[in-house]
Image 1 (cartoon, each protein chain N blue to C red):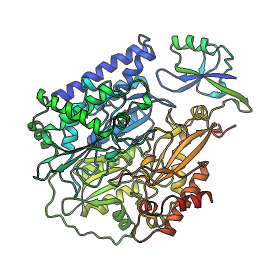
Image 2 (cartoon, rainbow over the protein chains, first blue to last red):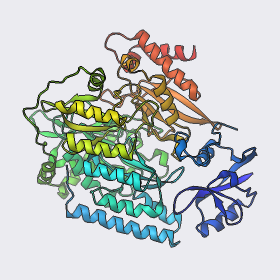
Image 3 (tube, rainbow over the protein chains, first blue to last red):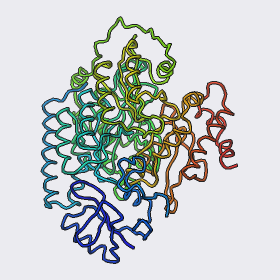
Image 4 (cartoon, one colour):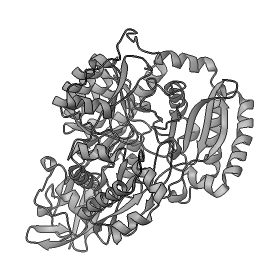
Length: 96
Length: 544
């Protein structure tokens, strides 16, 4: 599955496309963009609902959608060394 | 310390307002990200792994209490209560909101600070010896020279779009505390045979994916020709540095490909031309700047006596203070490397405290070191005990300067979008493994440096022990290297062999320290033993 991610323009927060015109801080809310990722991102960037966006390869797990690459899992979780600043503390950083 | 004149302040204030308008236009959709990105980067604002990151310049690592207080204020008001001191003697904030960035820059400008030229292919913050103006072994204070270079390089129209970023360091002692030979230009102040003060130039050093030690290209440049000579070095680079490949665009590649002799010939030719233009600032300007860096009003009756009956205080004094040029004073190092902590991080409260202590005990001055620590440069020895007690209460007195737990570590994959692996958890695990201070002192001086990618912000090439995090098929893997140094005995570390996983690298570090303890002779540091016995015994211990 393909997830869409980027940063909120104003705050810089990592956000995940959750379908339609919705974006979420939580990767668990992310929707599969299938093969429509580039089209959706062009529309969402134009509307300034996301900044510096791109497509991320992912798989469905028992915790919901999960990026395949470690870098994207760290983006989804927050810094692994500051649990007080983490967004999603239950994400496993090591390979799934 | 240098004080802005009307031109400095006007330039910084104008830049704040310019960026405020650029940010407004971006938020309003009048600028695309492609248009806005180079503008925000010119003001030190990156988009990192989790959020915008702002890198604030601390010129040659020197700041006063008011400026340090402002750094704490920004951490508290605009970030998440902490800042990260970097290997470029700067500070980074990891959680900045774009809409706040102009206000942050405006706040910084009120204390003569900014984030200009902390990114982009320009001349970056000039770095220097953190003990400048206080060290017993320096021949002159390098800060006036660094300030002169700062003024020359700020908004320099010819050098705003270099082939790549450009880093300059200035030192004034034989002991190199600034990794000078690993800069694009390294400048060492020296006296020539007739006692005249000038500078020795090294060009083409650097770390990154192609580490190189800068060769000496001029053994003496007179003081009144320093800017001309630096300009000649830059002009040759700007003309011939590669712009077709960013991985080959640093000056070290040009110097290497041309050869030191040919590069030097071209610099000398350009230098001769530069001298006909008469653009070098007069010595009077250096003298004007130097006036800002006069010695503080030392108590000339201050005693060298110290009561070391408190054993914890004694350990801290032995490890974290350095000789001062003024009798009765010491240079106090504040380690930002507590056991299990994040190297270089300080909370807003800790930043405030260090500012207050600098005001109370160090003539209102602080320094940031490339090893991600803080220095109070002028502390009366009779005040050291009171200072230590206050630092200790705030978790700022680990007595580990230059020991194995005083690690340099880049932010790594926990924060940096360029990183391939996490650095901080490895630093934490090594710190915990070697937590016993007696064990650390037994190992002696040991510079351990960790980078989370080949860009080498964590200086792993210059570590007695270096660790490089790589991505091996989606899994973090750590390469171990030995024998590097960023000091006056500069050398580049060599890789031991196949890498290790996160726990394996901690075991590997312990194994190489065991080899050192087994094979060292009296007085040898880890790196000395490595240089004497070579890689083989270490490889044997690691890979059997």
